[in-house]
Image 1 (tube, rainbow, N blue to C red):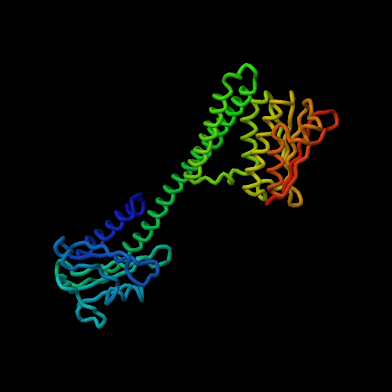
Image 2 (cartoon, helix red, strand yellow):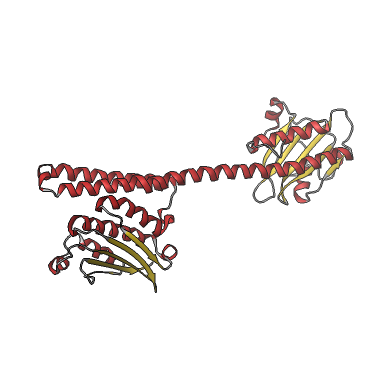
Amino acid sequence: MLLAADVELPTLLGHVVDEARSLTGARYAALGILDSDGTSFAEFLTVGLSAEEEEAIGPRPTGRGVLGLLIDDPRPLRLARLDDHPDRFGFPPGHPPMRSFLGVPVNVRNEVYGSLYLADRMDGSEFAADDQAVVEALAMAAGMAIENSRLHRRVRELAVLEDRDRMARDLHDTVIQHLYAVGISLEAMAKEPAAAAMADRLTEQVSDIGDAIRQVRSSIYELGLDLGDLGVRASLLTLIRSLDPIVGFNVHVTFAGPVDSVVSESVTENLLATVREAITNIERHAGATTASVSVTVNDGRCVLRIVDNGRGIDDSTVGTGGMGLVNLRRRAEALRGTMDIETPVGGGTALVWQVPVG
């Protein structure tokens, strides 16, 4: 039952002490649990003492005297008369007298976890070899049960962490991207002539959505998710799928090179922001029907290339940084990179944004 039980460790240890006392007919039983150094007791659980006796005894033992023999030499110890042992330290005032003694180590994964102590058989006789064998078997089972309890606890902790991770990813992959899409739609509406009278209100709503996104991101970090763990591929694909309804078609995405393993978190963050702004510009200004995004990592550089088949960008716009291009260029330059606008064969626009991977 101890081995199969999924119980909290304090409850399990209480069962072990109770069982040891019951199996041997002892008046008193205790379990000393070693500290991290393995030199003294961090905890000392007792059975058989009354509340008044516990209070009279005072502080728990730390592992001196006969109790400490099993710390220094973790082997079973059986004594007919506790008082006769030369290492006896003595009892504190208020401690009941104890005559016979049996102690066995408790091992968990071949390491000493603590010691199980028994004193005074109810019938007045000393502890026999059979008692020792039974308690040793119980100590072995207790060691396995303690490890089992630890494993159950780790499983529960992992389940909680996985649940938090799932919630954080759901927030990132659905809520944030949906808010981005709504914000982009409102920005587009604010630029329409018919919405001139409501431009201020629309701008205010866009600002509120930005605040909401920041709050959700804070919640994600509090849940413990490192957004960098999503990787460039997953993050970019999630973003593109949220932007497809905005541009009215599916943007094609490709990757080349060790994208997820070498691109830093700061580069990833700026790359995603660049894609978001570039795709938004395509929807607003290009009149395109197709677009593609490619990310290539080679020779320590991350190259982002965004191509559309729209009406293109004239030289004056490129030079002045219109349509948000100045922001994209600044992001690249802040990372010691560059941003260029090219005209592909057959027309359209190609934005080439490249930075060092780290």
